[in-house]
Length: 238
Image (cartoon, rainbow, N blue to C red; front, side, top):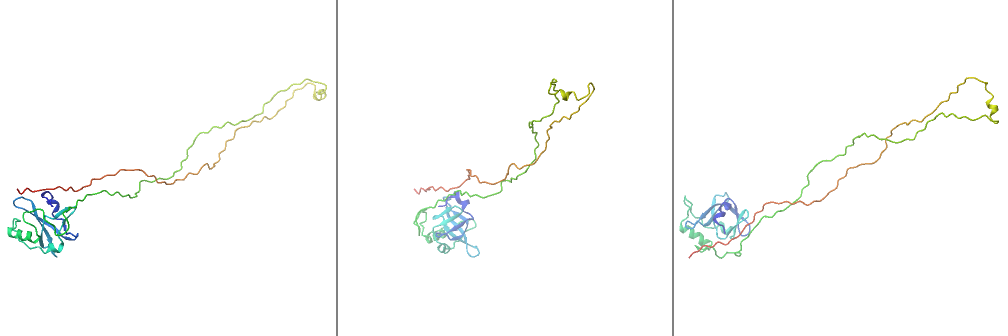
C-alpha cells in the first residue's frame, strides 16, 4: 500500500492494472481528512485524458517507476464518477459509493482482493556490466641512425733495413774482389709498410616488426543501486 512518504513518487507516474496494462497517469492523491492517510488515486483516463477515475490506495503498490493495482483496467474505468470540491474534498456519500463499488469496507485498510493474493512485489536495481572496445592509443615503428665509435686491433707489418756483415772466405773471395779496390758507392732500396685501410659496408642484422596481442586484466567497477524495502504499517483502531 502507498504511504504518505511515497506520494511524491506516485504523482505523474503510470498506473497499471493486475495484468500489466496501463490505465492512465496518477494526477492526484486524495487523503483522509482525519488521519492524513492516502485513500484514493486520481488517475487521468479517457481518450483525451480529460476524465479522472478514482482507484483505491488499498491494493495499489508503488513498483519501481509505476503503480500496480490489483483491479483490472475495464473494472477501474467503470468506477463511479464523483465530484470533488475546489479544496480537493469528496462528500461522504461519494466516498461511500467508491468503497461499495470496489467492495471495500469503509475504514479498513486491508480487505480481500478480487483476484490474486495479499503479496506485495519488491523490486531492486541490479548492476549489469558490459564491455565496449575503444581506441586507447597508437603505436608505430620509427628507425633512427645512431653513430658510435668502434675500435678494432689490426696486425700490420713493415720492412726494416738490417746490415749483415760476413767475413771473406774462400767461397766468397771471387765475388768480393770484382769491384774497384777502394771507392765510394751508394745502394738504395725501397722499404714497404702496411697501413690500415678503413672501409664500411651496410649489412642487414635483424628484422623488427610490430604485432598486437590481447592481454586480459581484472578491473573492478561499481555503482549505486536502489532497492525497495517493505514494512508493515498498522493503524490502531482501538
